[in-house]
Image (tube, rainbow, N blue to C red; front, top):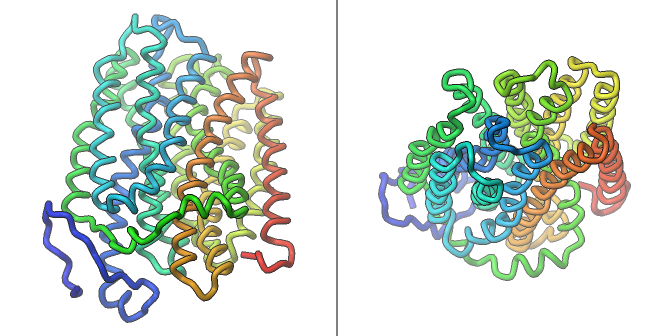
Length: 438
């Protein structure tokens, strides 16, 4: 290997010698290659998040002529979240099986399937079961995050993992805000009768993301040496502790991102009587939550992931209490402020919890860097999958609350209780004076 970047090629590129913890190697060879892979990883992951979040926008187009009630719309947003969460585990281990570059190309190209289906099949008269199938197929976009994070985790040294994973995830998370901006554009220009245009806009972008990954990304041979990672990770209690915490951070981010527009329309229907009136606000929370995710990783690098995560959950509980108060007093400004705070705080927590994972296993295996990397990569995949199920729970909580009481108050109380549980778990698991402190 030399410091000269390889020319674009469609031939699979495998790197056999990768030593990010070696300062000479990193400064002379590693950093430019890692940065290039990070850029194209973010691009593909960003498009994946947009496709995954597509139905958070498309439900705003489903007017009375579609015959879908609010409970049905929450189900349509829960289904892709569920499918995406389930795909995250096989996607994370596909990197070791097929290579990071190879899998990124394939998973990016696969996004064409839900996008083409949504572009041409959504129209008045379509039955609800067909809409559920289309929404479920969009779940493939949710798997891209896990493979991307597992891949990038292998490229960077431990001292930069918080930053790199935060940048990678934050750039991907921006796809939630981006698709909502696309939806706002389509609503404003073409009206609520053309939902297929939202998906159609992404078709050329998906092709470009897949082509860029094929030309400029690499595979790391060392990823193929991470054998039995899933088996060993599921036996480690840290896996499930971190998965629970990630339900609270990422589950909140993606769940609120899918549900925010619908909740606004249901709870403040007099203000947001048309989809375009709700759409102009819905992108703001995911945008800010995505932008601050790298900050969460950077703060964790400096202050410690457990400390940042602990404080974040305290603030999330307070933010959910503000939203509950605003809902009861019908205060739209306070409601929007509280929800934006939840997005920002969940973004910070996303970065800090992911930073905790490699730190935990580096401390657990201080003399075995390979074992620490092997297990942390597996746990990143598992926690990413379990955490995404939190988005399903958020949408189901809203659905059940509205079905039972016509209000979302019960859902907010459940969120507060869960955040308090996460505060206790973070404290007793990693902050009280023990060897596990990270």
